[in-house]
Length: 250
Ligand SMILES: NC(=O)c1ccc[n+]([C@@H]2O[C@H](COP(=O)([O-])OP(=O)(O)OC[C@H]3O[C@@H](n4cnc5c(N)ncnc54)[C@H](O)[C@@H]3O)[C@@H](O)[C@H]2O)c1
Image 1 (cartoon, rainbow, N blue to C red):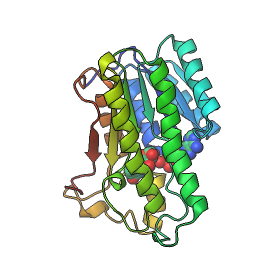
Image 2 (cartoon, helix red, strand yellow; image 1 turned 45 degrees about the vertical axis):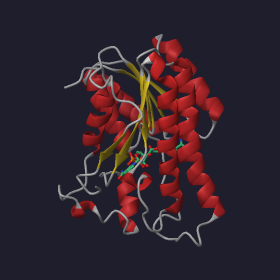
Image 3 (cartoon, rainbow, N blue to C red; image 1 turned 30 degrees about the vertical axis):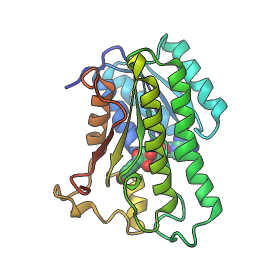
């Protein structure tokens, strides 16, 4: 099990399914956490649970990732509080209202703009702020999706946004290798969270049982992959897109 002892990790979407499971996993391996989400009360609950269970230090901040000033202030405050930044995990994301409902010929400007603003500009702003402050040898993990590697019907905005996350991950990886800063993306398939409930409602999460593993993934399984990518066991891994989908995609 990879140790994260004394690493300071900033996580967005921390109150969500994968975010909360990741926060618990990183805390259990010794990391100090700076948790951000728009859902202030869920963040408070999570922080209380983690502090009680793992006795680690947790800072929580209400942040809308589409607001670059809020993102910059959050990362500056994180470094001020913990005296360093070792890693960033950028998970905040949405599927959008057109997901599972509208084809490429009818997708709305409003939905496209909103999904791109949260999923792409949000990750860009977080990654940018983290790159400015992260220590040499640090590690950033961005949330893409299997939808970032293939065409899924009626998921145009979401798929376009996740393809873009892979692009901004790869550029940051090539630019920051000289200081041993690694930037990777994860590409989950169906993972059992609130987001998957939404996808199932519109029949896009019905792939759970089509994978060789024959079930949806658990948020903790994604947390374990993220913990590995943040750790010193992954020091030669950068610019990679790690698929975690039970074998659904080739
Ligand atoms: N669950 C899946 O099946 C799955 C599959 C592939 C990729 N992903 C990706 O993994 C990431 C996490 O997904 P999840 O399943 O935990 O989703 P989730 O819906 O459970 O959590 C998403 C979190 O992001 C937060 N958020 C949304 N907009 C925000 C904003 N503007 N600023 C700050 N926080 C915001 C929400 O409050 C929520 O806590 C997402 O980027 C998602 O696209 C999930």
